[in-house]
Length: 322
Image 1 (cartoon, rainbow, N blue to C red):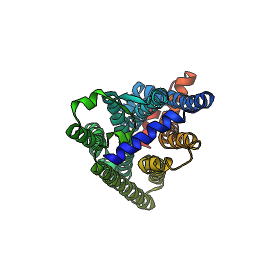
Image 2 (image 1 turned 180 degrees about the vertical axis):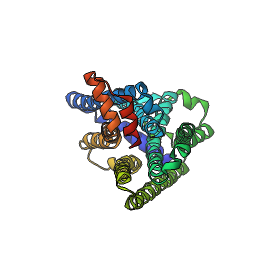
Image 3 (image 1 turned 45 degrees about the horizontal axis):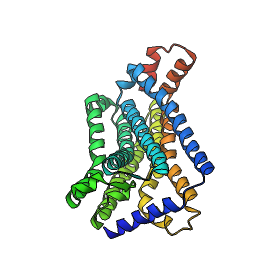
Image 4 (image 1 turned 90 degrees about the vertical axis):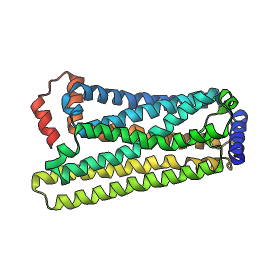
């Protein structure tokens, strides 16, 4: 508890004594905001296209994808809100701060789990095509999304219950410096967080490696038409792995924040901003490009909306099967 208090005190002093120059802060916030707006314009078009055509919301693959998109929208929105808020008012009421922290932490944890479920869906489509519709039914897909949120919220819920156990009611009427470490009230919590992250990421990586190898083996013995589907599925799983590598940088935050305090004060704002942008923004900005604009069905329907062209349902259905 004392170490957490030292971190919070150091961060509070840092923000009080080393506020970035107004012009520099404006450039950083503008860059953040422009990326957020551009990403969410694409996300908005993808969501609009998704709900406009039954071929998308009746297919488990696209349901999981749009859940990833919406999860990223929420995470980006929370990240932008906290970044701007903390830039002007570092200390926030505990209930408000914890609400944002839990939502941010849960959506962050959801992303790699969602990628793992998407990889399993592609594995099922390639290796068990005749049973794919039964295994990946709509009901099971929505159940998988519920499980993703349940698993994602467990670490934050554990931290919150610990705070309730060790703090008085007066604490929840106070204001705190709103960073994730503010929820660590006992030394054991930091260890538990490391365990959670290690287990989650290990399971996700095992799923990605397993599905990739299985899809590659299936492609070798497939017919020429099936090889195309298997190749696309293999590339998709590889993209999941690349995005997961970027997402994993999120889990280096506690060590990075400790390292940040050892650096010269004038270097900290820029390094912290670059780290924040790379870890929280770039992976979420890549999602709509990698999985949405890359997908033939989404790309075709988006063009139809943008240029007011009509897309024949039969062709959309045929491409989806591919």
